[in-house]
Image 1 (cartoon, rainbow, N blue to C red):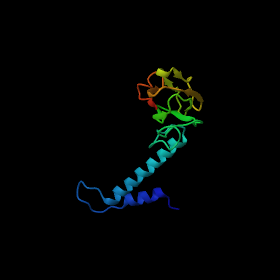
Image 2 (cartoon, rainbow, N blue to C red):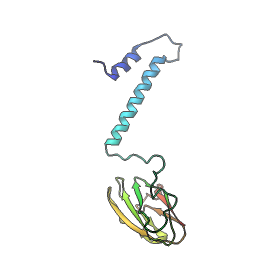
Image 3 (cartoon, rainbow, N blue to C red):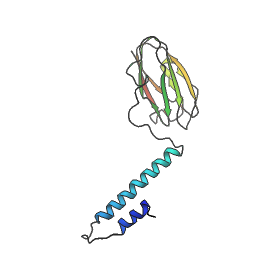
Length: 163
């Protein structure tokens, strides 16, 4: 029975006359196929092995990703801590309105959510833990960050805009 690896060996074993210093086209295709298979196996291993994968693209549409939450009955904002990042990196809420922010640690390391100017800080959250804080602030821009030593310096910061 033939396997995909047998096909790769077969492609690589075929040789044709090529100019000195140039590679045979079939050999290049065989090596490229091997690299692609290796990359897919590595990606699958990391996805299933519990090693966090970095966030990709932009956050999906949610209250946290919307330009501004507004009105009474505002849906809670979801903030995820990921080793070493926040998702989303910025969000907007209305001024002088109670807004609940649910902070969930989706990473392996401990993280928290701190806004010094508003005297808001969650406890240190282990992976999988959540804590809800209520923000009611005047219009302006506020920085939030993780206070674990080295995390802020590594770029684990975000921006809260209050309008």
